[in-house]
Image 1: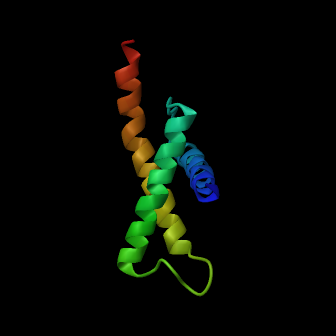
Image 2 (image 1 turned 135 degrees about the horizontal axis):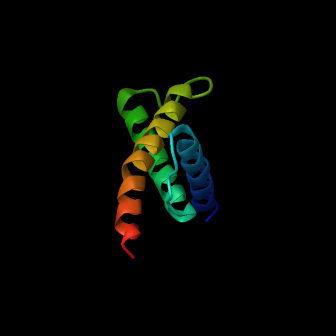
Length: 89
């Protein structure tokens, strides 16, 4: 249970950072920001494991950069689609 809360917390932090990095408003709800950040963390972990940099002797900077990059990409892709689909309601 604690691991799920940790994943959601990290997802929220990554999602908020992704929204801050992107230009302009991203009008997506907080829960979607959290889910996209968690998905970015998951994808970043997967890719870092695939290229062999997931576990290092120090801080895993490459893994964290990949996590943030995937979160930014997901927010950049989903936010316009979310806004467009909820504009007509």
